[in-house]
Amino acid sequence: MDNVIVDRQQWLSARLQLLEQEKQFQRARDALSARRREMPWVVVDQDYRFETQDGPCSLAELFGDKSQLIVQHFMLGDDWAEGCPSCSFWADGFNGTTVHLENRDAAFVATSNASLDKINAYKKRMGWDFPWVSSLGSSFNHDYQASFSDAEMADGTVYYNFHETTFPSSEAPGISIFARDGNGNGNGNGNGKVYHTYSCYSRGIDNMNVAYQYMDLLPKGRDEDSLPHPMAWVRRHDQY
Image (cartoon, rainbow, N blue to C red; front, side, top):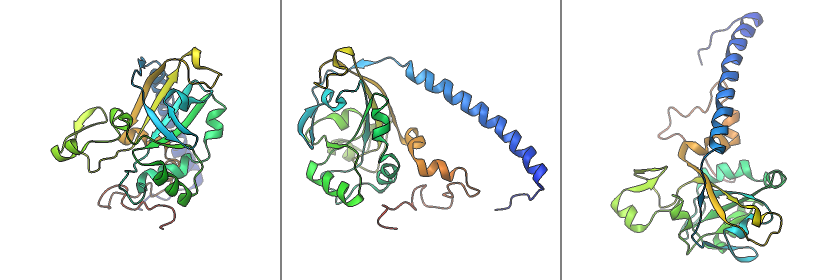
C-alpha cells in the first residue's frame, strides 16, 4: 500500500469529498432499487414441487403466510460431496436473517438440485438454520438459470445471467424473487397466483455478501487482483 500520509485536516477534506460521491452513489442505488420494484411480473404456471423438512410442497406453499418469497439458488449437486465454497461464503452471511425478513412479509428459502438428505447433512456440518429445500427431480433450478443439463454442459454453452455463455459447473448461484397475490396472503394454505418478479446472478448477487461489503471498506479492499481468480482464497468456514 502506497497511500499518501497527511495530517488530520487534509484527511477530513479528502473524506468529505468522498462522502459526497458516496451520497451520489447511494441516491443512484435508491433510484435503481425503485426501478427494480417497478419491473413487470410474470405468472408462474409450472407446478414446481420441492422436498422440505415437512414433506413435499409447491412453490406457493414455500411462501407460508407471506406474500413475498426469496429463493437463494445454492450450488450443491446430488453427486457432490459438499456444497460450493462460494455459496457457503454467502450462506454464512444470510444465515440468521430469516426472522428479520419474515417480519417484513418475506419468506426465505435456499434450494439445491440435490436430495434433502444431502442438503441436511451439509447444513448440519455448517451449523446453519435457514430453510433449505430440495428441487431434485424438478426443472425449477434449470428454469431459473441455476442448473444446467448434461447436454448443455457437453455442448459447452448454457443460458446464465440472461445470455448464452460458458460455465464451469452444472450448478450456478443466483437469487430469484417471487410474489403471491392477495388470495394467498395470511392464510398459509398456498392459494393465490405466484409471480416471478426478479432474478439476479453472477456479480448481481455481490451486494448480498456481508463479508465483501466490509472488505470494501478496508485499505486492501478484497485484495484479489493477484489471485488466479477472484474467490480463490475462499474456504468453507470449517476449512480455514
